[in-house]
Image 1: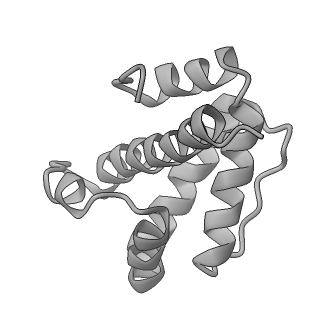
Image 2: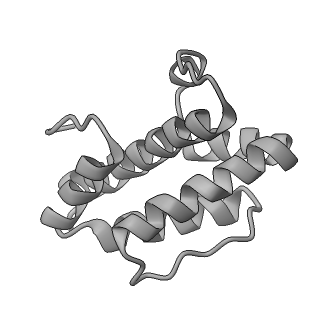
Length: 119
């Protein structure tokens, strides 16, 4: 990826700056659907709300539907090693870190498609 991001805020700002934020939301919705997670984010959702709502969703999946959580990570293609390296003293912090990893992977998909799959 051309620019490495370190946190969710900078990732979402970069997506906006590159005019790819809408595509990021579309890609996230596509993968949620493929993972049979019945949540759809509005295309006009503000970045801060996307971060908060995805964080809440992942928190619920970890606590209540762990198999669906693992399936989502598989569909999104978050590297297993990155998940294993997370160290959260509680589920809230862990789900926040996973939120970043999910958005980062979705951003990579969108960025690559935009950079290399132009008609």
